Image (cartoon, rainbow, N blue to C red; front, side):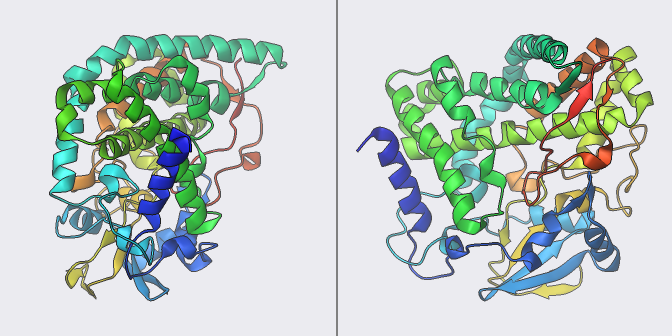
Length: 423
């Protein structure tokens, strides 16, 4: 059996192996009563979500296979739920009905509770300080300029129209995360093929787990390789500094978490953010002409779009009261981040308001599991949007906005293609 096959087998055994409990991997299709909050109206939350928030920011969503599911749509309630360290994000009891528990999980930091979460996050946190991230800035700018050139060339070869999602929005964060992880050039194309399917729940629990397993399989094998030959990036750095403190499985989980947070989310933000900016010419002009405007614009786009739609599920370990509702032990709470970030009680609401204070959002989550790569994402967006606007100040959508196709049922919301003319 190859190293990749062994790694995949280990991942799937740990995903499925659990004595007793609900097995979500057996779901062939996510039922509509659970999936409808993931649907959107363009870049906006769907009206049903907005109406639910207005009626009650804490809503009993459904009961599925005996599991009571609640949806949290209010900003204050979201921070309360996400900030409560007594809730669990350990999904393993719900991912298989037989076998040994072992020590593995399927999602690194995201599905790990303290004290294990604390130990692992400490190993990763140092790589995402502003000081350590500053070393990536010249490389990020270099990648952006190269993709701008590629975008221009692609448009010239295609009658002036180009899919910005393919030539810019995806390649920029993909190359950045590969550099961050220290992946060798010859393996990047293999890694690229694993990048998008993992957040799509259209095929149900088994499909999502399979997609997760594919990328983790790759990273587990790469982690094992770098244990003996550390690369220049995050994986190699952790091996050099903390090699004896972490095993290959946990290190692979940390790398997978960095990949998860650093690729699909940033790619979606670049594409959807550009779409929004092209529909607001004044903001596009500001990005090209006023460098000081970029931080406010980026922060507001993060709030307005909140591309990660649902935070890591919180499993209730003891009865709790949220928003006046008693939620019983054993229930699960799903925090709807776009709805919470647009809650008019605590944020600028539904309208795009970059001149107002936009820090009241939960686009990166909140509390113990807040995205560790938040500052890296901000760094990429603050560099990419102005560079794009300066190079192509007359960029415009090449199709009617109603023709654009978005991800149907994806935890990370995004767009299938963004055809533009460069002017």
